[in-house]
Image (cartoon, rainbow, N blue to C red; front, side, top):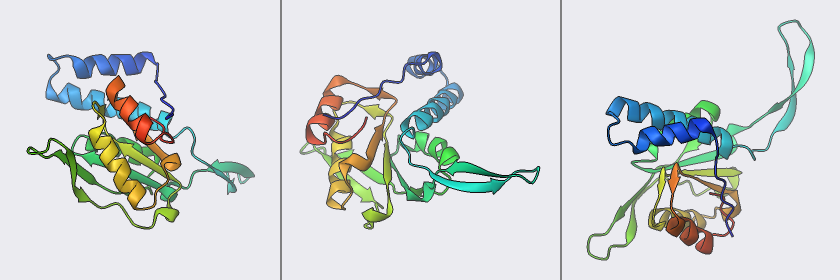
Length: 183
Protein backbone atom coordinates (compact mmCIF):
# COMPACT_ATOMS: atom_id res chain seq x y z
CA UNK A 1 0.00 0.00 0.00
CA UNK A 2 1.17 3.53 -0.70
CA UNK A 3 2.53 5.33 2.27
CA UNK A 4 0.56 8.43 3.12
CA UNK A 5 2.34 11.14 5.06
CA UNK A 6 0.04 13.59 6.79
CA UNK A 7 1.95 16.74 7.62
CA UNK A 8 0.70 17.84 11.04
CA UNK A 9 1.96 21.33 11.73
CA UNK A 10 0.24 24.50 12.98
CA UNK A 11 1.46 26.48 9.95
CA UNK A 12 0.04 23.87 7.57
CA UNK A 13 -3.30 23.97 9.38
CA UNK A 14 -3.37 27.75 9.18
CA UNK A 15 -2.54 27.80 5.44
CA UNK A 16 -5.23 25.20 4.77
CA UNK A 17 -7.70 27.37 6.67
CA UNK A 18 -6.84 30.33 4.44
CA UNK A 19 -7.14 28.23 1.28
CA UNK A 20 -10.54 26.85 2.32
CA UNK A 21 -12.07 30.17 3.38
CA UNK A 22 -14.39 31.55 0.72
CA UNK A 23 -13.60 35.05 2.01
CA UNK A 24 -9.92 34.68 1.06
CA UNK A 25 -8.97 37.07 -1.72
CA UNK A 26 -6.71 36.11 -4.63
CA UNK A 27 -3.55 37.63 -3.16
CA UNK A 28 -3.92 35.81 0.17
CA UNK A 29 -4.86 32.57 -1.61
CA UNK A 30 -1.69 32.68 -3.70
CA UNK A 31 0.45 33.48 -0.67
CA UNK A 32 -1.06 30.65 1.39
CA UNK A 33 -0.62 28.20 -1.51
CA UNK A 34 3.03 29.21 -1.90
CA UNK A 35 3.72 28.90 1.82
CA UNK A 36 2.00 25.51 1.95
CA UNK A 37 4.02 24.45 -1.09
CA UNK A 38 7.30 25.38 0.62
CA UNK A 39 6.42 23.34 3.70
CA UNK A 40 5.37 20.37 1.54
CA UNK A 41 8.55 20.67 -0.53
CA UNK A 42 10.65 20.31 2.62
CA UNK A 43 8.58 17.32 3.79
CA UNK A 44 8.42 15.60 0.38
CA UNK A 45 12.19 15.80 -0.10
CA UNK A 46 12.96 14.27 3.29
CA UNK A 47 14.11 11.01 1.62
CA UNK A 48 16.46 12.55 -0.95
CA UNK A 49 19.83 10.94 -1.13
CA UNK A 50 22.93 13.02 -0.48
CA UNK A 51 26.54 12.61 -1.34
CA UNK A 52 29.49 13.63 0.76
CA UNK A 53 31.77 16.33 -0.57
CA UNK A 54 34.08 18.98 0.82
CA UNK A 55 34.00 22.77 0.81
CA UNK A 56 36.38 25.41 1.99
CA UNK A 57 34.78 27.75 4.53
CA UNK A 58 35.30 31.55 4.54
CA UNK A 59 37.92 30.93 7.24
CA UNK A 60 39.89 28.71 4.85
CA UNK A 61 39.01 25.45 6.60
CA UNK A 62 38.19 22.44 4.44
CA UNK A 63 35.16 20.60 5.85
CA UNK A 64 33.00 17.65 4.85
CA UNK A 65 29.40 18.42 3.92
CA UNK A 66 26.42 16.65 2.36
CA UNK A 67 25.03 17.72 -0.99
CA UNK A 68 21.79 16.96 -2.84
CA UNK A 69 22.12 16.47 -6.59
CA UNK A 70 18.85 18.10 -7.66
CA UNK A 71 19.64 17.39 -11.32
CA UNK A 72 18.53 13.79 -10.58
CA UNK A 73 15.03 15.05 -9.64
CA UNK A 74 12.05 15.40 -11.95
CA UNK A 75 9.20 17.74 -11.05
CA UNK A 76 5.88 16.95 -12.73
CA UNK A 77 3.28 19.66 -12.15
CA UNK A 78 -0.18 18.55 -13.25
CA UNK A 79 -1.58 21.46 -15.24
CA UNK A 80 -2.73 23.91 -14.17
CA UNK A 81 -3.09 23.59 -10.42
CA UNK A 82 0.30 21.91 -9.97
CA UNK A 83 2.02 25.08 -11.12
CA UNK A 84 1.15 26.55 -7.71
CA UNK A 85 3.74 24.25 -6.11
CA UNK A 86 6.38 24.30 -8.85
CA UNK A 87 8.35 27.38 -7.78
CA UNK A 88 8.31 26.14 -4.18
CA UNK A 89 10.11 22.95 -5.20
CA UNK A 90 12.50 24.80 -7.50
CA UNK A 91 13.56 26.94 -4.51
CA UNK A 92 15.10 23.81 -2.96
CA UNK A 93 15.84 21.80 -6.12
CA UNK A 94 17.15 24.46 -8.53
CA UNK A 95 18.64 22.02 -11.05
CA UNK A 96 15.59 19.74 -11.19
CA UNK A 97 14.04 19.05 -14.57
CA UNK A 98 10.41 20.11 -15.04
CA UNK A 99 8.00 17.99 -17.10
CA UNK A 100 4.49 19.37 -17.49
CA UNK A 101 1.53 17.02 -17.81
CA UNK A 102 -1.93 18.25 -18.74
CA UNK A 103 -4.91 16.11 -17.77
CA UNK A 104 -8.54 16.89 -18.50
CA UNK A 105 -11.83 15.04 -18.19
CA UNK A 106 -13.29 13.83 -21.48
CA UNK A 107 -16.85 15.22 -21.49
CA UNK A 108 -18.21 12.19 -23.38
CA UNK A 109 -16.57 9.36 -21.42
CA UNK A 110 -16.00 11.31 -18.17
CA UNK A 111 -12.54 9.68 -18.04
CA UNK A 112 -9.33 11.59 -17.39
CA UNK A 113 -7.14 11.97 -20.50
CA UNK A 114 -3.64 13.30 -20.97
CA UNK A 115 -3.64 16.18 -23.46
CA UNK A 116 -0.02 17.31 -22.96
CA UNK A 117 3.15 15.64 -21.72
CA UNK A 118 6.78 16.66 -21.70
CA UNK A 119 7.88 13.72 -19.52
CA UNK A 120 11.36 12.69 -20.68
CA UNK A 121 11.90 9.17 -21.98
CA UNK A 122 15.23 8.76 -20.16
CA UNK A 123 13.78 7.57 -16.84
CA UNK A 124 17.12 6.19 -15.66
CA UNK A 125 18.48 9.75 -15.34
CA UNK A 126 16.11 10.49 -12.44
CA UNK A 127 16.25 9.11 -8.92
CA UNK A 128 13.26 11.06 -7.60
CA UNK A 129 9.99 12.11 -9.24
CA UNK A 130 7.62 14.57 -7.59
CA UNK A 131 4.12 14.82 -9.02
CA UNK A 132 2.72 18.18 -7.97
CA UNK A 133 -1.08 18.14 -7.76
CA UNK A 134 -2.58 20.25 -4.95
CA UNK A 135 -5.91 18.36 -4.85
CA UNK A 136 -6.26 14.58 -4.76
CA UNK A 137 -10.01 13.99 -5.06
CA UNK A 138 -11.11 10.98 -7.11
CA UNK A 139 -7.53 10.12 -8.00
CA UNK A 140 -8.31 9.88 -11.73
CA UNK A 141 -5.83 12.58 -12.78
CA UNK A 142 -3.07 11.28 -10.54
CA UNK A 143 -3.56 7.72 -11.77
CA UNK A 144 -3.40 8.95 -15.38
CA UNK A 145 -0.09 10.71 -14.68
CA UNK A 146 1.26 7.64 -12.86
CA UNK A 147 0.26 5.41 -15.79
CA UNK A 148 2.08 7.75 -18.17
CA UNK A 149 5.20 7.72 -15.99
CA UNK A 150 5.13 3.94 -15.76
CA UNK A 151 4.79 3.62 -19.56
CA UNK A 152 7.86 5.83 -19.90
CA UNK A 153 9.87 3.58 -17.57
CA UNK A 154 9.60 5.37 -14.23
CA UNK A 155 9.34 3.12 -11.20
CA UNK A 156 6.47 3.94 -8.81
CA UNK A 157 8.98 3.51 -5.96
CA UNK A 158 10.73 6.70 -7.13
CA UNK A 159 7.52 8.75 -7.08
CA UNK A 160 6.13 11.09 -4.45
CA UNK A 161 2.65 12.50 -5.12
CA UNK A 162 2.51 15.91 -3.43
CA UNK A 163 -0.98 17.16 -2.51
CA UNK A 164 -2.23 19.93 -0.29
CA UNK A 165 -5.64 18.30 0.05
CA UNK A 166 -6.53 14.64 -0.31
CA UNK A 167 -9.70 12.64 0.21
CA UNK A 168 -10.00 8.96 0.99
CA UNK A 169 -11.35 7.98 -2.46
CA UNK A 170 -8.31 9.43 -4.23
CA UNK A 171 -5.83 8.00 -1.74
CA UNK A 172 -7.46 4.58 -2.07
CA UNK A 173 -7.42 4.60 -5.88
CA UNK A 174 -3.76 5.64 -6.08
CA UNK A 175 -2.77 3.19 -3.35
CA UNK A 176 -4.52 0.25 -5.01
CA UNK A 177 -3.13 0.90 -8.49
CA UNK A 178 0.33 2.13 -7.46
CA UNK A 179 1.20 0.74 -4.04
CA UNK A 180 4.83 1.91 -4.24
CA UNK A 181 3.95 5.59 -4.52
CA UNK A 182 4.30 7.84 -1.50
CA UNK A 183 1.52 10.41 -1.05
